[in-house]
View (cartoon, rainbow, N blue to C red):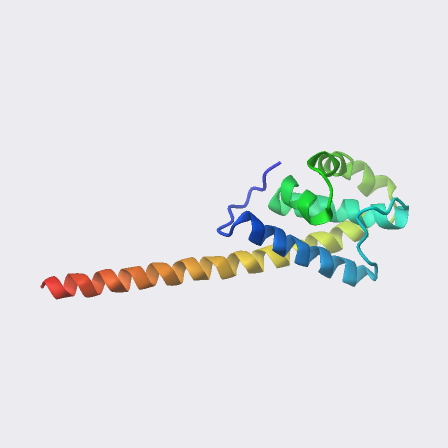
Length: 135
C-alpha cells in the first residue's frame, strides 16, 4: 500500500529516514534491531514498527528498512487489528513506533519543502532581475 503522503525526496532519502526511525524506535525500547530474530520479544515490536512505517511511507519502504520483503509487511498490516487486541505489548510498541515515525518523516518532509521553496525563491529573484533589466 502506498502512503497517502506525497514526499518531495527520493526513495533512498525516505529509506534513510525510515532507518533512522527504526534506530530511534529500538533505542527507545532498549532492544537491538535483529531482522532475523524469531522470538516474541523481537517479532512484536518489529511488526508494530512495520505497520507504523508502512502507513506513513509505504510497504516497500517499511520492507527495505526492516530487511523484510513486501509480503511480510502486508502480513503485519493484515494482522494489525488482531495484534492490537491480543498481543499484550503490541499496542504500546505500536503507539511508540507511530509517534517516532510521524515525527521523523514529517521533519524530513518539512526540510525538503524548505529546500524546494528556497529554489523557487531563487528562480523568482532571477526572473525578477531579468524582467527589470528589460525595462
